Amino acid sequence: MKNNNENLEGAQILLVEDSPQVVSQLARDLCVGDFQVTIARSLSEALHLINTEPFFDALLSDLQTTDDGLTVLNAMRLKNPNAVTLMFSGSPGSGDAMDAILLKADEILIKPLQLQEVKNLIYARLKKRNSPKSVNVERVAAILERDSELTIAEWLSRVEREEELTCVPLDKIQRTGHLPKLLEELCQRLRVPRLLGTKAVSEAAVQHGKVRQSQGYSVCMMVEESRILQVSIFHTLQKNLSTVDFSLLLGDVMTIADECDSQLKQTINSFNLQLGQLAA
Image 1 (cartoon, one colour):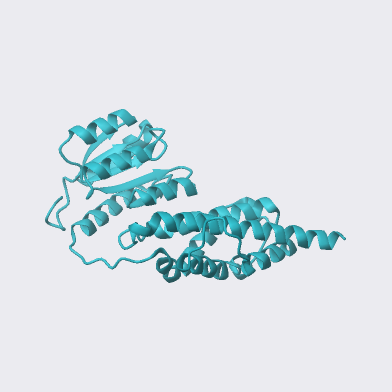
Image 2 (tube, helix red, strand yellow):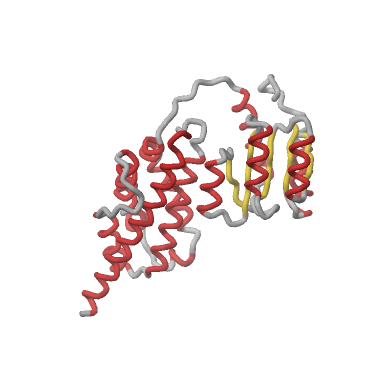
């Protein structure tokens, strides 16, 4: 890694992508930024380069290119733990996000990529990786409590891009009103762990089901909202990888998934009960 934080030109970038158009655009733009770009178009080619080339400063890889983009991420982490790792995908789901978090990806980008943004991000990450700093390790609960407003803002941004959900016109408060309490209950669950699968009443989830029924939602819409919430939570954690306590992360991620599913089940049950009472 370069010792001069202000002189990062010539950094070695491994680009893993099978689309000729994306390769052409990214390679051209990165070379203009004076990076040295090596291209791999398959899993085997990427693994061969990682294992045989002396050094890469950064990995830029499509999660879907190799059928298992996380294998490339894991290989780079093992060969060069200090490499900047940027993964991108056309359809990032909570599974991708969770796996990338556990493997310590620096960033998950969404296609179509903004080339200048990618270049600036590589520069910023390389500079940050070179800067000596002390790290205060944090529990997942502390991160989610501190960044709850950012998580809610990201959730709302994702929801507003989904026609399935915006077909019901709601203002910001109506759309997000349930989230602060749900996140508060989730953080409490993380701080006071229960066995996975343990039943506990979520007052916020029960109330949420009643409200969504009155607003004209469907069960499928509530399931989609819950999926987006998990993606947003995992993205918040992904942005805080430099401080998260990895010794407890796996258990906390499992707890998050368990609690979100439990809350969703109670929301649906409350929704159906309200619907039945109105029909009676």
